[in-house]
Length: 404
Image (tube, rainbow, N blue to C red; front, top):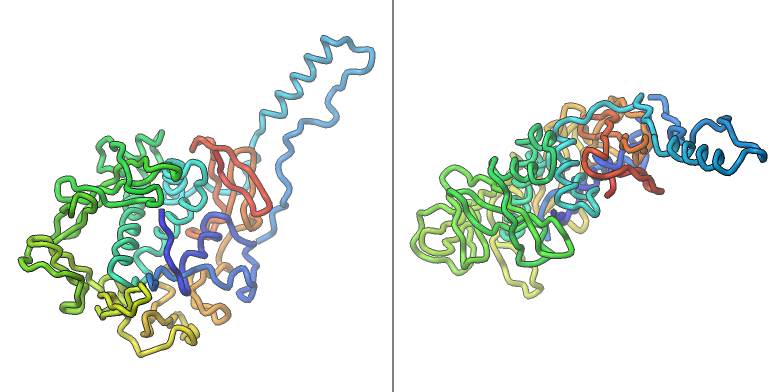
C-alpha cells in the first residue's frame, strides 16, 4: 500500500503500533515518544527481561561418555536435536490481539508476504487514524489517499471475519463482498493498488500481492450515497454523480468542493469539508506541483494564514494547531482516543503511555514463533502466533517480526 507525504503528525506511529514501544514508565520528554504520529495531510510497569525462553534443552541432560558406542551417540544426538526444535512458548506475557490487529497481520501476510511489517503497520495506523486525520492537498493526491483509507476501512469493517480466515483466498473473499476474489493485473508494479473496474455500482480495486510484478487480487469498495462507479478510458474507475453535461478540462472549485465534469454523466466531486474530518476545509486553486507555477484545484484549511516553512505546531490543552497549504487547522487529540494528548514537547498528538500496561522491550520479542509486542492501538502487550499466518518469528537489532 502507498504511504503519504507527512509534514507533521501520523505515520511515525508505525513504529509504535507494530514494532512495540518502550516500557510504560517512558517520560513524555523521551525522544522516542516525540513524534508517534505523522500527518496524513497530502501536501505535496516492570520491565520484562529481554532474554528469550530457553530452547536449547536441559544442559544437564545425559551426555554419552567416551565408552558409549556410535549407535547410542547417534540416537541421543537425534533426540537432543528434536528437543531443540520443540520450542514451547512461555506464554506468560501478551493477551490475544484485537480483531483489528489480527486482521491487519493476516492481510499483510497476503498482500506483502516477503515484507509484511510495513503493510501491517499501515493497516493499523489507518484503522486508528483514518477517521480523524484531516486531508488537504491536490485533487489527484486526495483521491489516492482517500482511496487507500477506504481500502483499509474495508479491512477494519470486516476485521473479525478477516482475522478468522484460514488462508489468503478466504481473506480476499471477505474483502471482496463475500464472493471469490479474481486475480487482476495492475498497470504498473509500482502501484500497490489501483481502481480498475466496477461491480454493481461499487468500485473494484486491484491490490498488488507481489511487488516484483503486476499480479493483484480484487477488493470491492462501496461508492458513497448518490454516486455510482464508472470507468474512464478503460484504465481508471471512480465513483461519479450522474448529473453533469458539460465537460471540464480540469478540476475546478465549485461550492467549496473540488469539482470536475470528466465527461457527460461522470461528475466527480471531492467534498473538502468532509475530507477535513471536522477541522474545516474548502477548495482553492493551489500549486499543481509541476514546478511551472500552474494551479490546480485542491483542498485547504479554513484557518488563519501561515507559512509552513516557519510555522511551529502548538498545543492548547488537547487541541493541536498545525499548518498546511498556507492555512492553520486545529484537531482534538482526544478524538483519536480518550488516552491521547497534545504533547508540549513534540507538539504532536501522542498516546498517554502512563496508562499503558506494556512491559515488552521496544521492538517486541519472539517467544518461539509467537510475536509479543506493545500494541499502541490498545496500549497493552499482545501475542501473535506467526505460524497462523504462514510465517515464523525472527529477531534482529530493531526488534521482532513475523517473517516468511
